[in-house]
Length: 273
Length: 330
Image (cartoon, rainbow over all chains, first blue to last red):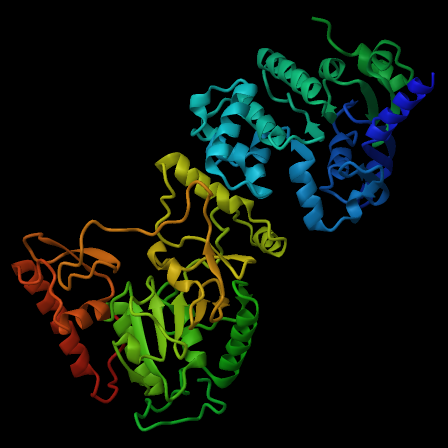
């Protein structure tokens, strides 16, 4: 019994019951218009949170604030840095530290791969950029790492010196994911990672993402308007409407037993193939 | 070097109607302030209110403004373009300064106190009493990777220089080695990544821990930066692809130098090609000292030497004459 308690305490020390990211009443106004208001949640290590809602419901705004790219007007975003147990307000960090954080512990996958990739340099250089930004200075190692990650996202190794502008949309998106994951982040933000891709490519990408997230033990916040994507990837779901989180819960629970009228509408308006 | 009162009017008599050094006193003062700041923060690009100069952007307006601000009546000026004293741009700028300051000019690196250069650092090592002024077309080393000025300034402020290595990585991936041959990025004083101006990377090592002051002026972009004497200037590289300068399998065809930067030139109408020192003063000095290159006596070699001598004669004929009303430049 005592041993069991000790084991549990150990698990606590490892930090799995301390949230990795805490959003506390996040509010963002665009002038007189509301971006999002009072969004509060905890994200634990290894957990995937899906954020669903219609266009204009504040999903991307929320993601922008969470990932430190936009300052909130009220509330705060706190992140557990390194191995410590303390939560740090990421918007209070100096910009240099925040940039470093975004290159090491965090990753952002954009809806449009052009926003996340350097289109003018090769795939290998795209993957190598984050390691180089934090001090990797060995070409051979960088090259090996790039080849490894290309194969992990199912891109042929002989495309390593090709520019992403010659890649298909699906390949660009996979390259973007490789570029973000190469530094071994703990937390990834994804904005509609499968938007704009056809269904078969989407399915492969989802497979890949699910596999990577599970294997690497990543925590992730995934913004999507596609409930199927949310069902497949997310452990927990948050439904947004007009800038507010109207419902939160386990994914299956929210989708199978929606409580809020808007969630009910959302679930019932999915076309059955 | 910097005169306290610029009404100085020496025996050589600059053309009347011009302030000493062409720029008005307030402008020189403003540029000197920018230079002092640049010297205090090596590699940092100091904005300055660049003036219109009587020649187009890209012809050395930045370097001329820096030179005009620091030149004094006792200075001896040398101007080089691509290493040579006898090229159009060098001749025009030298003539310009002779006209507006009346200072002595020279082609001999060792005699000059102030050297304005485009594209080269002289082969003859410079000493503590000398100042090298570079003409810079694009002062921002990050520009190729990041077009936004607001963003590049922020990257400098945060020392966020990962993208510089992306360009070098790309070079190795495409060419198997770092193929960047000029304008090779450096880190000044361990802090700011700096563009050394389009000098060949052959000259980069000469900037490191140099005993002389180096000033960089960019006229179009209106930036001044500097490397004070004895400051570290380190070229960026990878651990397994270290920085290397160019080397040639040949020696200078005229003077036989095996340690200078060589230009390939077409010497006559038959299309004969020669490899000769790009630093014309270095080459002429060696030839005067009796060194002979393998093709110095060939028809092409003689033709080239004659051509250079003719330009030099013209220059000397031009020197003692009082400034005429003819327009400068090409």
